[in-house]
Image (cartoon, rainbow, N blue to C red):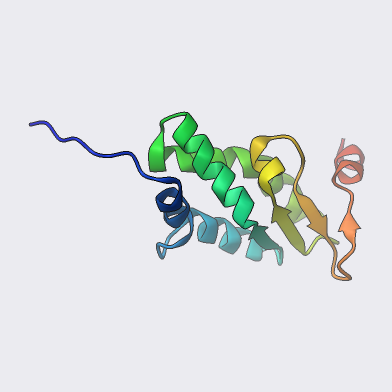
Length: 120
């Protein structure tokens, strides 16, 4: 039996990331919420993740890999940073060009590099 499927569009891939009840974005937001950290994905970051999946021709399955790669350091480091209450993932973070933006309760930026150096 043969079946052919059309590749998903960028907007469809973004919908896969955000709309289902068990969407990847929601899963990671809930996981970080356990450590009282709000995880925020910018619209542009979701768009870049979809573009990456399209570029590598991995479709919706590739989205998991892209999001996991993006959040690898976040998942290990951010819960151990008591002053961080918000983590923002932007397009550069998804591209691997910049770390996520971290904020404390006062809304001030927390330096990512300083915490990693202290942990080393």
